Structures are given as C-alpha cells and as structure tokens.
Image 1 (spheres, rainbow, N blue to C red):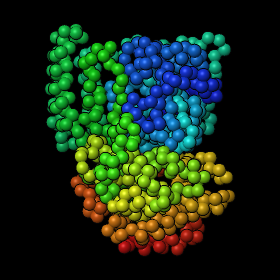
Image 2: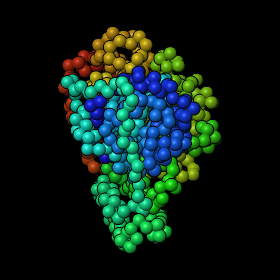
Image 3: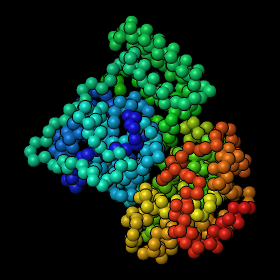
Length: 614
C-alpha cells in the first residue's frame, strides 16, 4: 500500500521475549522456505485461507487462525491490538547474512493492504530500506512501511531475524492509530508507545478477512486501479500509446460488466479480453518507469493478472515485482553457466561516501549494464569462507588467496542468479556485462581479479574534504552501522567498511577514526589498482559527474565498453544512500574538524589526487 512516508512506527510495543517464547514452542517443522527459493528466507503461517497451514502462501479465501496461532495467546493478543481486519499473517525468518531482494509490491493484493511488522528476534545491524530511508526495527516495536516503494532487507549478522508480518486492509481505528504514530524522520524523544503485554486470561479474537476478492473484478475497481497506475508515471514517449490501449481495454471491460456483472456465464469473455490486453500491453509498457522505480509493465500485469479467477483456483503469488530473478534450484547447478556468462565485469572502487551510489545508479541506466539492483554485501558475506565474523573480524580485506575455486564458483553463481538489465529483465543468452558497486570492494581488488580475470575497475575520486565530512555524517546518523557489536570496540557502533588495523583506533575521536578509515582504504585500493593493467582500469571524478552528468557518464561508458543512450538533465536525482541533500561546499559546515583530520593523511590525499589526474 502506498503511504505518505516510507516508514511509520505505530504507538504500540510488545514484550519481545514473551513473544519469542511462544514462537519457540511452535511446531518448528512448519517453517517452510520462501516459495521462490529466495536463499535464507522462510516462513511459518499463522493466519491462512481456512486456517490451513498448507495454504500459507494463499492470498484469497476466508482467512482464519492456524492451530498453532490458536495455541499462542500472546501472538493472538498482538493481532487484536491492531484493531484491524486481519488478512494473511506469517512469521518471517531471515537467516544470518541473508537478505530480502530489492523489489516493489506491484501485485493487486498489496495495493489494497498495509504490511505490519512486529520484530520478535532481531539485532541492531539488521537494516530495512525503503526508497531513500533506512531503519532498524527493534524487537517489540510495531511498524508499517510503504510497499509501493522499492524496499530491501539485509541481515548483516550471524543470527536469524524473525518478524511477525501482518497483511491488513486496516480499519477506522487502525488508521487513527497510524495517525498517532511516529514517522521514521520524527524524533523518538518524548514519544512513548503503549505497552501491550501478554493477556491475563483468554486472548481477544481479532476480526479476520472473509471476503477478499471478486471475480471478475468490477468495472469501477478496475477503472480506479488504472487511474492510480497512470498517476504514478511521468511523461514518456510511449506512454500515450499505452494509455490509449489501456483506455480501450477499460471501455471493453465496462461493456462486459454492464452485460454480465459477476455472472459466471461471462467469465470466458472477461478472460479472453484480459489475456489479449496483457499480451499486448506488457511489451508496449516495458521500460516505462514509474516514480517508485518499478516498471509500468509489471504494474499493469501485477494489478490485473488475476482480474478473472474464481477464488478456489488462486493459490500462491509472489510479493510484487522483483528487482532480480531468484533461483530456486541449488546454487551449484548454475556454476558452469555463470562461469561462461560473465565478460569484463565492471567494479566501481572508492572509499565509502565518495558518491559511488549516485555513480552506480547513473551507469546502471546503460543498456549494456546488468546489476543486482543494489549492493552485494549478502552475496559476498553469505559465503562462509568470506564471512568477516568467522575470520575473527580482522577486516573486510580479501586477497587473491581467498578466491579458491569453490568460492569463485559460488560467487559467480550467486551473481548469475540475481542480475537483470536496466528494464529489470533477466539477461539474454550470451555474455553478461556486470556492473557492481559495494564499498567493501575497495579492499578486494586482488580477490576480484582472481575471480574475474578480465574485470575492469573504475576508481571514483572525490575531494577528500567532502568525503570525510560525509563519512562523519554517516557514522553519526546510525544508518550505516555494519558491525554494531564489534568485539573490543568502544564509542559509536562501527560504521562503513572494516579496515585493516581498526583496533588501533579504539578510543580515538571520531574525526581521526574517519580520516584513518579513508586513508587506509585509499592506500590499499591505490596499491592494488597500480597492479591492474591500464586497459582494465580508468578514473571517474565526482566533481565532473555533478557538473555534467551526461558527459562524465558517457566518457566512462566509452572507456569500459558500455553503450550510453539515456538522456540526463543537469541535476541527478538523490542516490539511494543519501543522508542529506548534496550542496556545494557543504563540507565547510565541519571545516575545522575535517581539516584537522585531513592534516594527518595529507600524503595519501596527495597521492589520490595524482592518481586521479592520470
């Protein structure tokens, strides 16, 4: 459901330990893998169609509590406290070093329903991203989020995360509660949610959905959804043709509705009309972006693909429009194909907060580029041999020796299972030109060269004064905590990449920590890049990208062999990991501490400037 803001914390809180005790008493054999095989994702059904746990992925039919929920009074109390009509409910488990892929919930089901999250087992490092916002939902809290925006979850921890996830159309009382909630941007100080503890006696019984679909979809509902979708699209050369095609479809649907209504006798005609429309509109609308980053083709298909169906024929559906295909088969089955498919993958290398997200998101518009839609922390560190915690938190440095044949095969397979093109389509047969950006890769160049011998590296240079100011802001924001419980570390939780020698910084002031973190990263990446053949490396400049985005993006694409055709204005949109809006000279707000910290790393700063002039 579309919301005014990415996240809202509801004014409720729960006893997470008491909830966890109930969860641990449930039949653990009921945990089932994600229906698409998404690694590390599993669920235990609590409210399903007819209360049947085997229907845990069904979205229609009368929703009723499963036997396990009926034996769990506190979980039932949580649902009742929402004062909403309750649809499907599941416990959602995300194993250590796993993620929920970046996607938008374009399906009709989620357009009508809000998703409520009650964290039961979690850690401070678990990050939930929605559009340009990022939160850590703490255990016992209660949150809703905008499923219509791109969202992603990363469990950058060894321990699992368990949320109770409730789908609901809400109620008047529920939306009053939302209005009393706290948007993620509002301060916590002075805001106190109400504690809902375990029930003293029998738990109250929530109101469950009994009617949740109509087949065929009524003309008025269909017309409303079409209006919503086209209101989410800006101008595009092909939009008028798609709008005309869709308008004709709505008119034909109106005629059928007035002739047959919901009479089953009319279903074959509705079905033929729908099938013909989707077959024609999907390719016509492909590549037309909506404001949330999803494709209009996905929006139209997701909204109307089940506009003609009897409820008993509808079973599982997947959450929305994925940003990447998910492979359900064992990872090893893709190894040989993955090895053949990658050709000259491109890695953007830079210290953190150098503008690499903006640069990556710009280059990802190339028709040549294939990406996973975001950063690949889970892809790397989900491999046991590359797990920083298992290595004793030495650092994020990976050398060539870490690229054993087994590790290299698995890494290539993981990327092969996730990549898509700029239109979010799986790659066509043949070579894949991967584009990747993860700040930790600044410490992995030898490793990446071993896995991808023909890899190309783009060093993104940014004025160190600007970078240090941005790194300070990132540490202080709390949104970039990578190792919240780093053994032996004191002060603010460790943020950004983990550099070699980090233990020497224990007890140091934050400006010195940040300056050393930048300098160590820069020295390592420059040492490594100097060993890379000149034909496999180039330099991009952040200042040039800001001054003339099209010229700098086009220049780099020429260097790396990417095609370049998207029009760019003079002002690029904010990057996905922006903390505060860019502004010329913004670093001067912290000039004194930045310059003092920079004085200790001047030699590295000068070396980086020289390298960027090559």
